[in-house]
Each structure stands twice: as structure tokens, then as C-alpha cells.
Image (tube, rainbow, N blue to C red):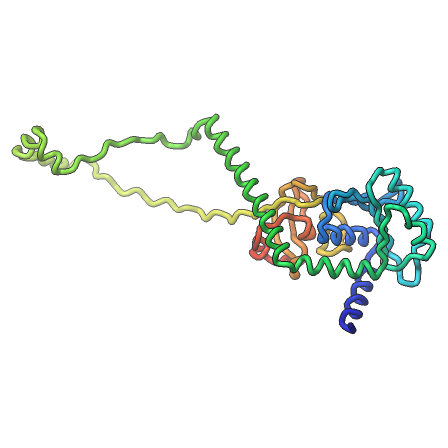
Amino acid sequence: MIRQARQRSLVRKELYALTPTEFEERVLLLLQDLGWSHLRLRGGSGDRGVDLEGEFQGTRYVVQCKRYHHNKSVSPSAVRDLVGALHIQKADRALLVTTSSFTPQGYAEARDQAVELWDGAILGQKISEAARLREDPTRRQAVQRRRLATFITLVMINGLSVLSAFAIAGPPSSMPPTIRTAPTPSPESVAESPLGRTASSLPLPTQTPSPEEPQPTALPTPTVAPTERPIPTTTVFNGGNVRAAPNMRGTVLDQVHAGEIVELLGRSADGNWLYIRNPRGQVGWTHRTLLSLTTGVDEHLEVVTL
């Protein structure tokens, strides 16, 4: 019990250190670990009380995030605003997540509405649940199978594209023509043929090269330049930010979007962040949960220290 209380305290301190925007991103990663899909950040002016949107078990949610210290409760008006946003956005359910607590009136506002309230205690439980799910071997195998299937599909698509282009354009002009040679007859077959019997009785002429005739010289063996190691790539599983540092406080440089192919340039020391180059040429850090990583591909990446 003491250990669990200490872990909850450490989690709260970690969450309190985040900015409101970083807390929204942290909630997005948490929901992703819990099995949510189609997650997207919606925060900003005109968000109508919606910071995130996503789906869980076929139900479309709108999500509001409040990073408050434990001595400040979420006001009932925030719950009312989220109920209104639920109807405006035509979602199925709404979720309000906070690091603190709700007032009794806030719970009353959510009663009989399609609204879920996660206070600091529930949030801590969800973070622990997500950690257990990440360590569950069955779930890991399912994720690995899904990522492997995605990788095989991409390889098949790329392979078919190359074969199609080759079939249409033909072999490159620099490729030497194929020379078909007749099979060499065996000595037995030559001896049994009439021509073979006649030829075997005749002396073979000898040819002595003239002194003036130049003798063939051996050509130098070409030196093959070493090929560079190919840069590994992967597919973006869920859209997110590309940051200047491997943490939630890093400046946002660009984004990655679901389905994009990115280059893997390195990883952080703890392995939670990958140093990537997106299709627009932007280099930076992206959290590993946003990418569909083939099993073991990140283990071969060098640790990048900037």
C-alpha cells in the first residue's frame, strides 16, 4: 500500500509539471495505450470545450482535459460546457479528465448525461492499467503481429510496383543482353557420332602465335565501393508532434500523420522517443507509441544525444 501511494504521488508530480497543452498530449498517449483509436488533438480557440476526440469500442468521444493542482476542483460550469459540446459535436459520449477533483455539483451536472468524469484517483488507476497493458505479452504479440502485417503489406506493394514498372519499361538500357549458350556435348556422345569417329582419327592442328601478335593481358579487377547502410523506415500509426527534444516539453517543429512513412535516424537513451525524418524533411523527436515499429527495429538504432 505504501509503495502504491508513493507511485501515485510520483505520477501526480509528473502530471503537475506539464503545461496544459502537454497534459492534453499526455492524455492522448494514455488513451492510445488503453486501446482508443482515431485520436486527434482539437484544442485551441473555438474548441467549444473539446481538447481531444477519438473512438473506444465503436463509441465516438469528445474529451476535455483540466490539469489542476489538488487544491483546486473543476467547476460545475466546465461539466455543463462539455455537455453542450457533446450535443454540438454530435458525439456519442464525453469524457472530462482532471488531475484534481470534481465538486458534488459537478457530479450532479454529469448525472443522467452521456458524460464520464475521471478525477485524479481514476486517472492514476488508468495510467497503471495502461502500464500493465504495455507489459501484457498477449497484447504485445497482437501489436507486433499488426505491425508485421503492415510491414509485409508495404513490402508487397513496393515489390509489385517495381515489377510492374519493369514489365512496362523493359530492362534498363545499361543491362547487357542475355546470351543463351548451347549445352556442351559429352565426350561419349561425340565419340558415338559419325562425325566424332572421323574427327578422332585425324591429327589436331596446332597453332603457334606469331611473335608480332600481341598477347592478351589480364584486366585489372575493379574495386567495388562499399554501399551505405540503408536507413530503416516505418509507418506512422497515429498522428502527433515532431519535437526538438525527446520529451513533452520539447518545442513542436512539425507533425506526423497516420499512414506516412518516416525514416528512423536514432533513439533516446530510454527508448521511448525516436529521432525521425518526416516526409517533409523535418528532423526531430516523436514518441514511439505513434509509430508502427517492426519488432526489434529500434534496438539497432544508435542513441542520439543532442
